[in-house]
Amino acid sequence: MKTTVRLETSNPGSDAGNSAGGTVLIAEDDPIFRRILQSWLQRWDYRVIAVDNGLEAWDALQKEGAPQMAILDWMMPGMDGIELCRRIRSRRQSPYRYVLLLTAKDDKQDVVAGLEAGADDYLTKPFDVDELRARVRAGKRILDLQDALLHARDALRFEAEHDPLTGLWNRGAILGWLKKEVERQRRTEDSLGVLMADLDDFKKINDTCGHLVGDAVLQEVARRLAAAVRSYDSVGRYGGEEFLILVPGCDALNLVVTAERLRHSVAGRPIDTSAGPITVTLSVGLVAAEPQDLGSLHCEVLLRAADAALYAAKAEGRNRVESAPAVRAAVQGGM
Image (cartoon, rainbow, N blue to C red; front, side, top):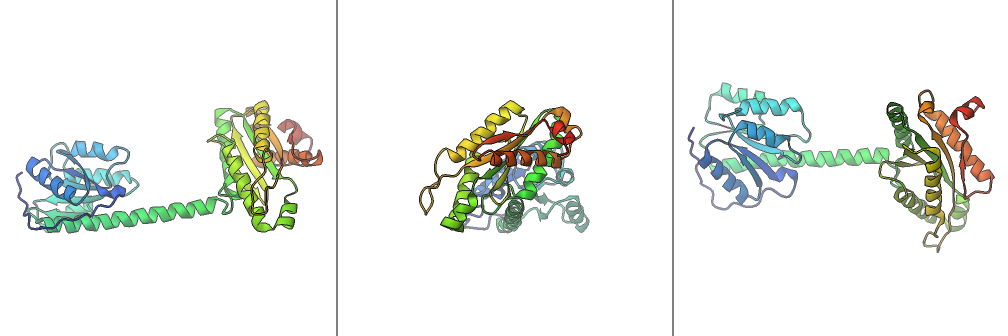
């Protein structure tokens, strides 16, 4: 199907920006019209992916980092624009794909059919380039709004799950991770290590140096703890100067090694503050739950066992690591 386009504008500028919405997929089987579309979009600083049939367009939209905006011809080999719209909407992909449908059909029922199939806008051939630019700009505004909303959602989610002072998981989030890890280790039949760590004599820092210095100490301790664990371990601020660390797939012997590494990361060198260098020590209680333990125990049991081991570390002089007894023995003993 041959079509014409009226090129009546004279001063194209940059519309695209640098967001993911700055890439446009063109699916058009007419090579001349496809090159015209590509030329104008590139003049407006959009990155362009151009294909000549609906199947190639569908494949391009399934790839990672696929364009968020697509300009689709209604009539194409392989898969027409209407069917392609239906497929795009049936996947309910995120982020949203904005679809501009090109058609030589100008009957109202055809336009309704295109919009019902999932197109966001349409352009009737032949059209002038100013109309194309205006409709692409309208789509870009919607995609920019989507990006802003997604960033706002992510920021709210981060705030809801992270401690505002340290940036670690907050109490609710780290307890949620504990529940997930227990369930996952049950399925994989692997061990799980739970560490409860507490800064020693932290109240003295607040009393002698002030709460701002105390906050700076907590922030640096949190940074050191996060740097001392593996990427798939979890560190959360359990409350005050107490931290909960989850170490999946770690047996009792290696869990002690991990705990000692965490303790040394904090106590190994002073923390620089506005009040001068401050030496901080860490007491750690740990419990290693083996697969047979996780089959029937609840998260609360693991927390109580780790907390009891932490209490023992404090009672034995602080700045040390103590292990809880075998979890089942702890339960049978009334913990």
